[in-house]
Image (tube, rainbow, N blue to C red):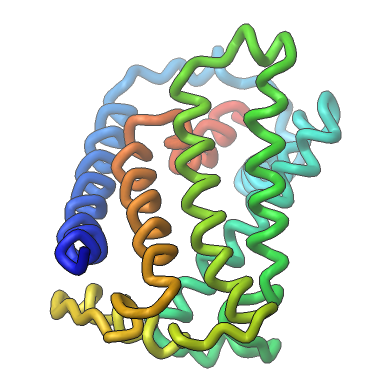
Amino acid sequence: MRTIYYLILVPMVYVAFAVFVIGTASKLVHIARLPVYAPTLRIFPVEGPGWIMTIYDSFTLPTVRKHNPLLWVFLMLFHLCFFFLIIGHVELIAKIDAFQTIRHEVFLGRGFVGLVLAIALLFFPFRRFVSPNRDLSVPEDYYLLILLFLTVIFGSEMDWARRWYDYSEMTVQDYRTYLFSLLTLKPVLPAAITGSGHSFMLVLHVFFANLFLMFFPFSKIMHAFVALPINKLRRG
């Protein structure tokens, strides 16, 4: 069992990040080489400084808000919570004083950020069970959402155990030691990481996160990298 834990928590992490970086870079190069017909892409008149309106379109999704307010609410919750969880994982790698402008523990939200994110990730696949979304959906859409949901639910469960049920076998320092060691290419697995009652939760969280990273460059979620330039072209 310890060998399986090690394979998932160390070598698989490096492989996943390598696939993510190389795959994403290759995909972006491919997209950059595609012909661009800017005049046909201009959809909106320029209502203000081009880049300001581009950022507005990319982060507030006004078209979605206009045509599907409920989806817009869940998209906003998803992106906001995902951003907070990224900050939390950065804080797990190293303590950063700049993030403590508003004093908080790692993670933000006392466990509710993960809960809201999990609810949003349940909404997205269930909305695809109803036409016309069902007719437009492909298996890839469900695979991506399932992977992300499993990653979030197992990661959040560890936070919930620590926050809501005073589970303290695996501490923030244990996570920090593990993640920082990966970053410095000197992997260390503290005893609490592999020997506590919640070790399997961490292993499953990392396992599904690895699968998500490897799937990312080949999925529709690549729009995260091209939303700004596409909206700039649309704005003209």
